[in-house]
Structure formats: C-alpha cells, structure tokens
Length: 282
Image 1 (cartoon, helix red, strand yellow):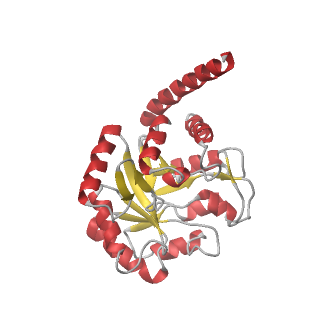
Image 2: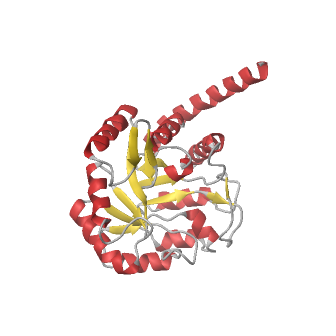
Image 3: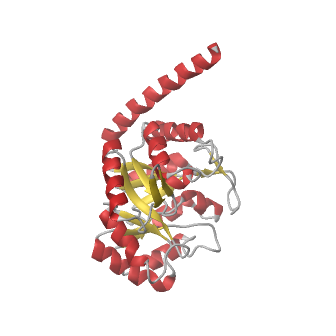
C-alpha cells in the first residue's frame, strides 16, 4: 500500500510540473497548439477522450469522424449528429475549456460526392478550423471550393504507401498547386515509414504546413513499423521542432500514439512531458 501511495505522490508531482510547463509554453510558443488526435483513444468515446486530454493538460483535439460521442448522446462525431447533440457538445466543450481544431482524417472511406459538403457544414457549425483529408485526385478542386465556401481549410494528410496518394511530400506539393485553401498536415511517423527524409520533406513544404502529427516509430523505411514513445525511435523530434520554429510555424501539433490503445495514458503522459521538455530547449 505504501508503494502505491508513493507512486501517487510522484504522479501528482509530475502532473503539477506538467501544468506549470504548459503555462510556460503557452507564453513561449503561443502560435503552436498542442493537440491529440483522438484515434489515440479510439477504444473510448469522444467524451472520454475529452476527459483524457484534459487530464494531460492538453486543450486541443483533432477528432476522427467515426468516434462514438458517448454518454447519453447517440451517434459519432460527424455530420450525422442532429442540432440538439451538436449544441450540447459545443456547450460541453466550452465548459471543459477544450477546443476541437480539426476534423479528420476524411478520406475515401468516409466521404463521397453526396456527403462531402456535409462534412464542411458540420465543421463550420462546430467552429472547427481544419479538415484533415486524403482526397482522391479528382476531388481536390471540390475540396478547395468547399474550403473557400465554408472558410474551413483543408490540410492534406499522409498514410503509408502505396495506399496514400500523399505519402510523398512531392505529391502533396503537386496537389496544393493552384489551390490556396489546401495545405499540408503530414504525419512524420508515416513519412519515416515510407522512407522519406523528414527534414527534407518539411523544407519542401515550407510555408504550407498548417499542422502535423508528431510521433515516433521503431524502424525507418518499414511501413509496418510500430509507434514508440517520442524520442525513443528513429524520428529526430528535436530537429523537427527546430525546423518548424525556423519556418515560423503557426499551427497545430497533434500527438498520435497507436500502441496499447486501451491503456496508453502513462505513455501519453510521457509523450506530453517529452514534447514540453524539448520546447524548453528551443
């Protein structure tokens, strides 16, 4: 019992350090929003994800559109929610002081020509600034048009090759050409899985990175490589943060961790603490 009490004291101390660090970072990097992609907690509901993020001191979320809302509210976090549930969620998020900054990733498994505009309407209603997406090539102009209509920016995401159109920064750049409402929201872990040099890729996308997934993986150039804790794998996280600082980045940094989804809070605590410690070194 004494061991458990001591562990609890240590945890509370570290949590206090975390909150103090977040306060400091909020002033030191006021243009960077630390977020969690809720796929990290996909074994749980959206409401449970809000509580988990809040307990980590993280106030921003990128929400995937298939996540169950939870509580006494039916449905998933998507355009299919009726006005009553939407309004309840908006009030709840205000109460918890949590902001949903992005909806996604919207890809061919979620959207079609009949429902695409509904995603934008939903994002606008919920005051969500970005849709992270992997559009089909032939749909890029329509994504760009809807982004302008609803004033919700589209940020291109990447997954492992060969299924992702945007696994390479070169294809992402090509897709953005002539489409001012479309930017980039890469996953640096997937870049590493695809054998892409992260630093070179970030330089290619300079000025158009609106957000990114910050993660680390165990092996370079292996699409099946597993996630690991930040700083423990092959992604040079300090170099990534230095590069976006050099680029005068003003956007969202989403933590995503896809290991041990039922019991990953201790790992997520370590990831947040690592991120904050690296900000202190910039």
